[in-house]
Amino acid sequence: MVAKDHLSDKAKFDLVLVEAAKKGDQLAYADLMERYRESIYFMMLKMVKDSDDADDLTIEAFGKAFNRLGQYSPNFAFSTWLFKIASNNCIDFIRKKRIKVTSMDTGVVNDNGDVMRIDAKSTNLNPEETVMKGQRIVHLRLLVSKLKPKYRELVEKRYFQELSYEEIANEMNLPLGTVKAQLFRARDFLASMAEKTKDSI
Image 1 (tube, rainbow, N blue to C red):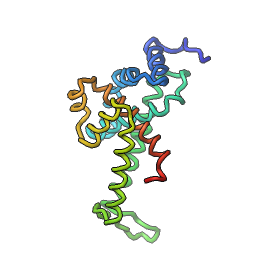
Image 2: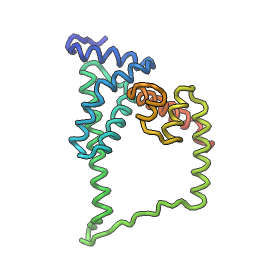
Image 3: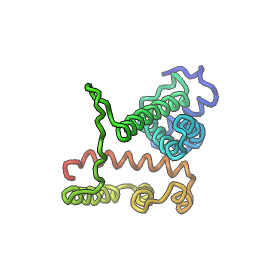
Image 4: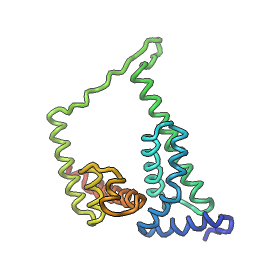
């Protein structure tokens, strides 16, 4: 058993929540988000200078952290671990965005010194892709129908009705953090089911 005496009282409380979350306690996920969402968001905003990107990156950071809770060790504070995941993910995002923008706008210089421009591909689907996309949507709806009612309703509102997190929270009379935490869990379940049934798509 890992000694926890080096942790602050705040970190020890986080550890209690982490242990509860590992056992599937949805409120523990929500509490962890509530404790750190704002500070993670402002760190992301400082790095990317865009509120929409910062919001997306905040969600991603929690998603990655929650997916890796089994890897977390109380050798150091949960907040330290979470901020590391968030900053690394943000750095990857900035790197990819920079490469994409540079490639699309100015092109890439090859070994001969010539500028190679990249033409954006059409976003229109060909007939075969349209059929495949339709099949995937039907398959996704089938998977969603197998979720527990509370998860199914959240997924339908978010991805089929395209409601915002705030709208879902208002409609379902739930805390915003709970909505986000449960959607993370729902996506985990869907990903797991999709992996097991991928050959049928």
